[in-house]
Image (tube, rainbow, N blue to C red; front, side, top):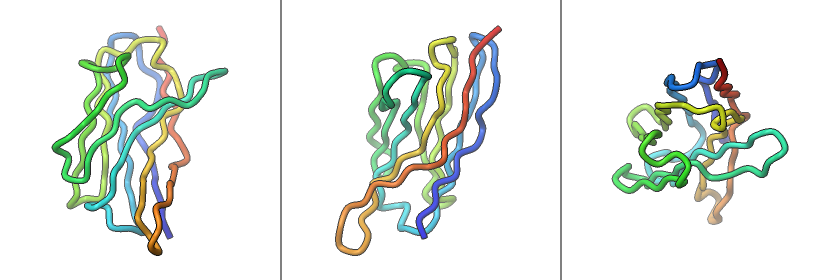
Length: 120
């Protein structure tokens, strides 16, 4: 079955860095469009960054552009989110997202989420 397992979250001071990982299984990762979302307390879930199947094309939310970098390793079935210059407003649960072509249809899958807290 499809699984998305995030890791790498934690507590970091403002200005610090974290690297999130999402290990995928149960589908053809190299042909799957991937993304990172986040949800802060009391707010709607929002797109942080997405990445094409090859990794060549990426898109970022305005709030993280220039600070975050999304990448993928298709040999390891893993997508990453490198977060630098973190701000308190980056505090949220971060989710891995996959748009999977399976059983002749498109299905959306989410990971369980990993907490990122930016605080001094």
